[in-house]
Amino acid sequence: MSIWSKISRDKIPLHVAIIMDGNGRWAKKRGEHRLFGHTKGVDSIRNVLKVATEIGVKHLTLYAFSTENWNRPKEEIDGLMNLLVQAISNEIEEMDKNEVKLSMIGDEMRLPEKCRQSLNEAIDRTKENTKINLILALNYSARWEILHAAKQMAIMAVNDKNKVQQFTNEDFDNLLTTKDVPHPELLIRTSGEKRISNFLLWQLAYSEFYFTDVLWPDFGADNFIKAIASYQSRERRFGMVSEQINTTNE
Ligand code: IPE
Ligand code: IPE
Ligand code: MG
Image (cartoon, rainbow, N blue to C red):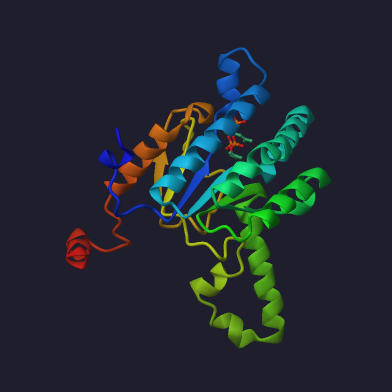
């Protein structure tokens, strides 16, 4: 059955953000090591990237490693960092062929040298691609990002107090790591958890949230389409009342 029988061609979100959660529990249920779940999670990324590209999503931001994830056992962290390098090397050819542009948000300085190197090579190789922007959130923290922007504003204020006093939402946007990307219309979180876990706090202010109990390694194209269908069924009022929205659409 065609995808288009389940969703409409109008109202495709430009930007979808995903908190890919549940890899560890998926592995545990099978009596396997957590890393097995993370490895399987890479297949889900490939599948979701493919279907997102197909339906015309322009930006896909994936939460891959938070600043809090450094608190996990060293063995898991090392495994995740190795997996990142391995996944980039396995997928880059296909991604480039499919015109995927890779980028990252987060503080890359704390990532191991080999991760930074392979990421930067992949980012550079795909920088002219325009079909879809795959944004990996790595060593990412929304509080870090907002604090960093606030500090930049404080520094600006020393030289030009007026400029900072007149700062708009858009000006603040331009200080964030997501500055070239529209805010996500849709946030998906897998695995049944219902929290943001320090992800895109500012940018999610008016996003639609979609929570599913499906664990990330089980999340595939069908699940993604279901999330899009749910998004399309919602009325985004942005503080207005329903009648105003419907008049605007007429
Ligand atoms: C998400 O899966 C992946 C990362 C945080 C890197 P988890 O590893 O958090 O899986 P659970 O939540 O323990 O099942
Ligand atoms: C959020 O998942 C981070 C990523 C998906 C990379 P966690 O599994 O780390 O979140 P918490 O700690 O349960 O909130
Ligand atoms: Mg988790």
